[in-house]
Length: 436
Image (cartoon, rainbow, N blue to C red; front, side):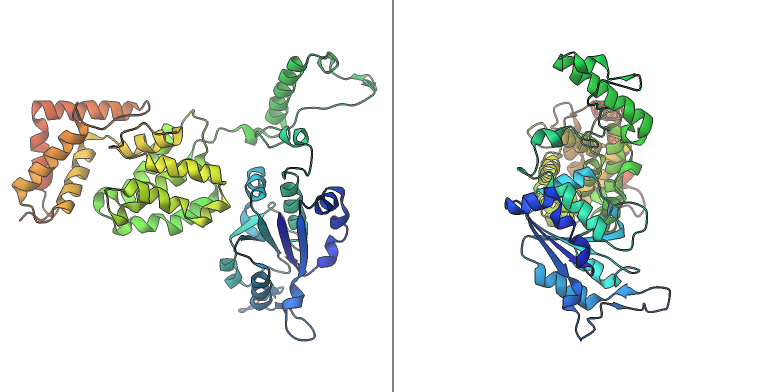
């Protein structure tokens, strides 16, 4: 792995480069670590990298030009650049795992009051190590480097990495060394028993006990939209959901928000990644821009090719989300390949009988704009029969009382003829569709 650190204080890394993990990994060829001075990219004999902000205010900002030139000079096609700044998302162990799978990282250290804001757009992501203030990004860059490096094969013994705090949202269990008694405090007998299975169970229970006592937030069940990573939610709200605003009514932004809402209703009690659930629901229909027939494929491709998502997910998670979107379509001839596919498929059903009929009317009248009322009625009834009748292709893939009851009601209306008047009432609504 190659890591390049851009800084105005390269001397701060002298001791870091000599630490055992770093120096050993460099010697073994596991790590190519470069410390680059941003001042080398500033023109003039004074190599000025800072300037006062427009509009006034205390402190100085790092100038755009030396930052830009330093980044460009050290980039390759495989580079992933990370700005270390308080406005970034909070760095976690899952980020260390994600970044450890990359080949070329560039860490950019802030200083003074921050960066010229125009530089933010040139980096791939922003990370923060916590809600407190440091003089610069040098210490955070060392923290990221060490946390990533220790996950690389060969840098440490595998068993030293597996049972760690935060790896399974648990703190590490209590550990002891010789002597077995200190100030009348005895090492737990179970650890001296030689019974490895009993010791494993004891350690797991103690890890849970310590986590409940010291970090109960780690055990909180994440099953709400409020638990979604804020920076991911901001990215999707600002860059993905607006794409749906000009989509036809049955697949517009209101439908997407409803599928997101339904998805979170479905995951109560499930052990799933809420960031993945949210993203799948947000992207699942985006490919309709290129046609409805294969929209599940193009939607999955759109998500898979969105490089920004690599800021929050590793490649395996990206693949799972792509497959879930591909599997969500009601006419699919196979069961979704994962729980995520079952969630979005069920959330997309949203079987409120009146809402289903309304969406069907919207879709068919939009698909056949030249149809008269009789033709439109026939298209709608054929669609409802093909999809929702007892011989229809729609399937429910996970327990959902709302969908089960809604589907049964819809089928009863179809069988007793009640649905005919409901369809006609939607068609006759003033201003709902133009009937020719």
